[in-house]
Amino acid sequence: MSMSYQRRTKDQLAARIAQDIFDGAVVNLGIGQPTMVANHLPHGREIILHSENGILGMGPAPAAGEEDYDLINAGKQPVTLLPGGAFFHHADSFAMMRGGHIDICVLGAFQVSTTGDLANWSTGEFGAIPAVGGAMDLATGAKQTWVMMDLLTKQGGSKLVERCTYPLTGLGCVKRVYTDLGTFECTPQGLKLIDAVDGMELSELERLVGLPFELREV
Figure 1: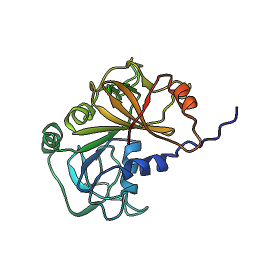
Figure 2: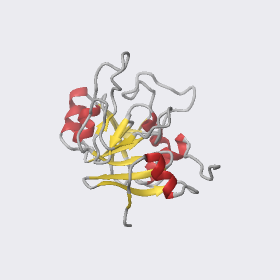
Figure 3: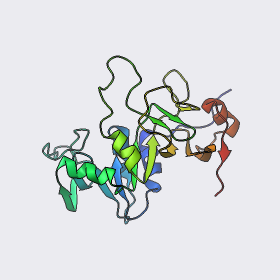
Figure 4: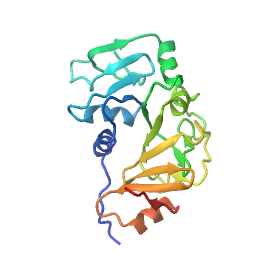
């Protein structure tokens, strides 16, 4: 059977997430793919970007040749600073995260359970990153945790699972999962589908996920 749907590219996925960020939100974009969301924020919507290494008010990525490596995000990528932006001590930044002052954080993940458990720092294999870093503080401290990831592993298995088998970052913390094939909401009752890519049959999506889900009421 030929596929009639088209996966979202990384940029399309970043733009899909940016579309849902509300005006006035303070947002932390995790290391890796989530940083791409900064380049797709809607014009005319004030969104304040926070980085755990101590920046508030980041702008989009700098143009080639205009990078300032004294001004970087937590992933060591050069960033820009918008008018009114500020940088400050690492401890103050973590106090913002732990104190519930971040409206939304967008993180990558290895696995997310149907009820919102998050595993995003280790697959248990030798050579993985040595510690969870700021992800645990963000996942539990932010008012909403969103995940940006491919739905399937390179082996074709679903990263949405009934129960995480990798070391956990947080329990029941993920509100939404944005993937290349569709957007899901995690609830105590299980997964709900917010949207699917054009041409994706719900039966095919359910087969790929390997778990049942309900359609979210609009």
